Image 1 (cartoon, rainbow, N blue to C red):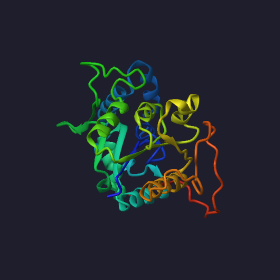
Image 2: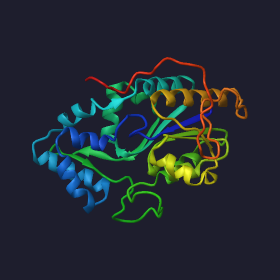
Image 3: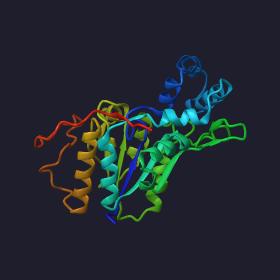
Length: 275
């Protein structure tokens, strides 16, 4: 084993969209979604949207068909496989939901590469309606974190993972959204955080990079994600963590300067995966 735990966000990190928005938009419920959005938390709204879809005759099978067409950069797929083959343990921490995530991963043949998925629970009830529940039941108690949405504190999940893993393990955390900031703050010296450039997590880190103890390496698309992630894995495995020569992307005073790399092939755009 490589002694490395790689933790992925899901939406806009593994896949190149927000899975909730993808389902709502593709099935024609965008207008209703936007009307209801100011009235309730996002997680509650998605459960409400599943109710509205069921009442309109949309089946779980139709939802699955839409999920099988989400865009994903092909190099993200190869990055996941390469990291797993290198002996890394792969986990997901996501504010999507288990039904969406597992449907997509199963369609891509990637479910077995992840040892754990931490996300909002979901299930199909006896009436055939998909239910989406909060990871943390905020109707009963608060998780107490002002940085995170009421249904999930990713930082608490990362703290639990850190406390249960062997201390020798190094962590690499990949994310894009504001919900990924809290777990980024919990990482230790020697860990790595990979924020997607020009997305909310990147902006929050840029606001005061000194608050982040982990090393910061940005990425822009699936090709960058693959190159940066595999470089970091090789760096940790080879014990060359202090070397900067050849490092593909290093944060410098939160300007996220790019160190020139050797030329490489142009990367394909994100693909919609066929059924």
